[in-house]
Length: 435
Image 1 (cartoon, rainbow, N blue to C red):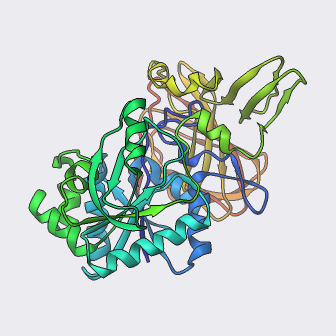
Image 2 (cartoon, rainbow, N blue to C red; image 1 turned 30 degrees about the horizontal axis):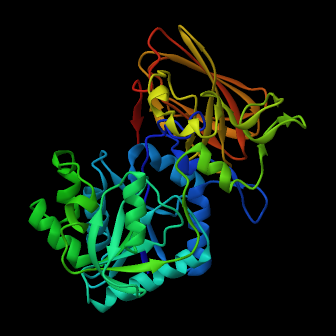
């Protein structure tokens, strides 16, 4: 089976744990079987492989998320990188062309598309295999998964089937409704549209030719910036006549807000946190190395990270986005393919960062034209290369780089480094990479 996982998101709905480069799906708040914490991305990827280890997975995402995906899933995971964000129709077309032209899958191969971050169990992924089987039959160009609704929701679009069978034709679609309309949709047997569907590769390539003018991967990639942003639902699903829906009645949650996230959390306290006996329904997620104490609170979420601190009534947390958009500061924490970095201190002409490189990983060979840098090795062993000269480093060593010098660091063991950047113009854009 071929699964395309769509990874997007702006990083505002789970602030302060999410930011421009760490969207909600990368936040580690769920316990794994090994008892450490894992993210939604890691949870979904692991579940797919447990159901069918032979499943081919392709993650489609923007450039800003590639490092986080490789950090959490490993360098072997297949990624289709969007040159820029253009909504789900261009993203799915690009991924489909990638499977056909780069991975050499035939036009008769079936692809299942789903979000990367649903909170589901094993039966969901077993249902994806059923979805692929139905699409392979060719009775419909698209086969959707319709989620059996548990309450009248205003957050989802609705699929109205023409009968009550497990597989049925689609009668019509409805946009996200108000509460009263949602109630009427449920009386009509409507299903939630969870953004999950299956199709044959040739079907989407044909649409790409008709809508965009070309269907080859290289042409799509080079012209991606010129494509019109539009969702797959608007461009394809709601216009397709040969379309079916398959009912799914298992657990399915869209964990899009702090309120819904806390419903799925196995632990109420993550990180250094204390609540007294008068607290009720309080969840704390603390990524800082300082304690958080709560007393006498009810129905509250507290979250602390290098990017900020949130204290909110759980219901009100669903309305935080416009307030978060008013916050203007640089990203203070990010996951890279080689490890992580965390900003410790920001001054007018200096920036201090803690870097952790995983064993065997390395940074790109690069230079900065407008700043000097200092590396202080606080633990581990590795090597630096500065202007072509290699040197071993270990705990206590200090390495200096002048502006313009080419440099990189390689971790022979896990390497923890304090990096101090100094200059009048410190910017993430002041970087030139070398082979």
